[in-house]
Amino acid sequence: MGNVTVQAEPEPLPIDAARTAIVMIDMQRDFLEPGGFGEALGNDVSRLNSAVGPCRALLETARRREMLIIHTREGHRPDMSDAPRAKVERGAPAMRIGAPGPMGRILIRGERGHDIIEALAPRKGEPVVDKPGKGAFYATDLHLILQNRGIETLIVCGVTTEVCVHTTVREANDRGFRCLVPEDCCASYFPEFHEVGLRMIKAQGGIFGWVTDSKRLLAALNST
Ligand code: TIU
Image (cartoon, rainbow, N blue to C red; front, side):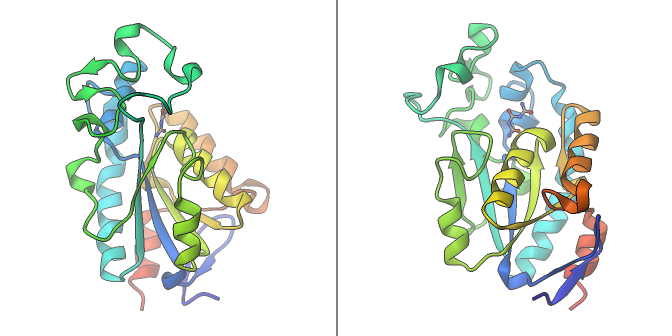
């Protein structure tokens, strides 16, 4: 297997680009822009902006190589029938999932805040997976889409590193996918969680996967 080798930790990872998918996790206004869910939780949302440029560069290369690109969005049905009370009933009622914010109802499908930021907008033909949880496999058809395309390796990007990216990497690892995480294509509201989250993935011989950066990843993807 493998037509390119990506320099990574804990060791270089050979990948077959035709069997590798980019999974862009939750690059939504609700997490990256003021007035959404991220800010409602008390976070400084500007901390996530560093990932946008590297993700954009990776998408450009992946599109040129005709790799499978999947986008996810965390959010709920307008009637919130898929939102567990334990997830909703936290914090001030005016700041909860479903409450009206400047970008529409917080984390609700169809609202402006729920959609992906313009710089990373999905293109025609790129599946968008709406997920009610943190992990992209939970209660979605992501696994089916990946199986139908013969995907064996995932390049997981997005926000936030220790929450939805990590949960998705763990879910993917248990389902037999190799996961490669480019560290500058992810971000967290907490720099220390970002750092330690990445260390957790690559520790113990790559217990959950491999960690690289967009420079090494693009060098490999552009090498053939
Ligand atoms: N709060 C936080 O760090 N993240 C989330 O709630 N969702 C995602 O990570 N997408």
